[in-house]
Length: 171
Image (cartoon, rainbow, N blue to C red):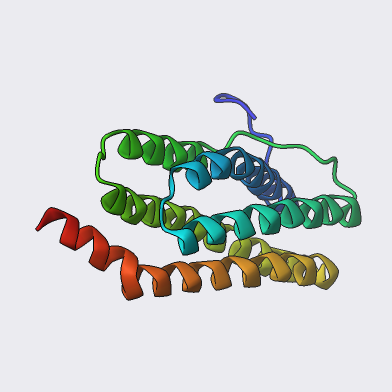
């Protein structure tokens, strides 16, 4: 896919391209999470990141199943959106010296990732159904359910303590 080429002609092409996009994104997330685990000081946040790393590895395996089920070559295409979210998280975390504020920033960055993934999986599921690929949609729905659950856990963690601790650090 280049600047002056038109490689996407059909909804099926768009589906495969977006599948390749989220495959890239999930692989980048597995590279970013260990750093986030290392930076997090809240034990529950650290544990949540560790759990999500394991889940993400499973999500990659499911994506590989969808490629196979759909008869598409397993391939990643660069996803500027996830690269940008991860770059922003890295830059922001380097600018914060207070550990409680850092935990809040890491949590917020993780939610930005989750929200991106939720949009991608929702779209892929809708397109898979439109293409008559309920089998692919069902596998993708497993990933979507995990992403939504992770987002809910992050929200609960932020509201229960992480944001409060960050606020007290500035007082």
